[in-house]
Image (tube, rainbow over all chains, first blue to last red; front, top):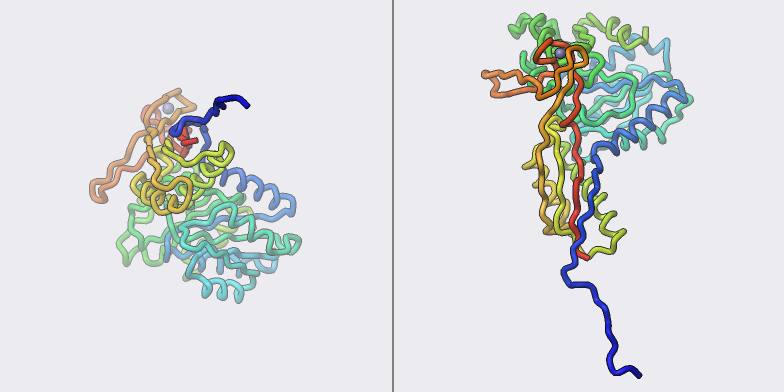
Length: 227
Length: 123
Ligand SMILES: [Zn+2]
């Protein structure tokens, strides 16, 4: 037997630095790309509808369903925590609806949409609207894998929304200025609002609508390539 | 705010790295947060403290470096910081994505990411 056994133990406080260079926002982008490929495989046109609470996202989708339901089989994913009522409205308008529970989250992410896509028969759908959570900051950062992204604002929000939240307008393909029927009463200059949107995001297509009267709804469908 | 989901993602990644190396605990995490990621550092810290409880990251130190926005113009070749639109009536300063020199739309080169730079582990 050796009289002494040498045991090598690592220093108690041994420290290791790992360099990672890993983008935390990249994970969502990858899943979004997979969603996009899945939707393309089934030839589904998907539209992410973003906008603050009360801007009229649900009413816009409801109007679009009314306009397009004879032409396409339509489904809606609802990401708003409070919109089971909205889902019911959209079902009545003629679409299949699926509620996505975001918990306490402020936006939908690509992974939640991927899970939802697994719950419906993709052969049964031509057009998918995804109603994002009512928020103008977070959804911009989290693409879902849709063909188009629409941001809905209403004249009742006042003229500063585009300057306050430029990023969502940059990320959007279409900006809808809703509730133009109230512009005069609210003393909002719609031309000025449109100019502000164009200033932060020159390439976005701006459409003015009144979901109340139906004005502009056809144009939204057209710029989305659905008419 | 989306700080919570980003931090949740961060913690998952770091736990994974720590497990791979049989670490006893995480001492420090260093992040590069882009100005245009619109992630608020205070809210990130708050989320980190809440979400790291009962994980290997508990009581670790979070370092957040802010990365300035950098844009490039494809028309005139401008490369630098974007212009900001100040709106005194709203106390905001929003980045404009138009070239400060020629006014054409610019491409964002830096400042959009939220990157884990370094993780310090105790083995
Ligand atoms: Zn330029």
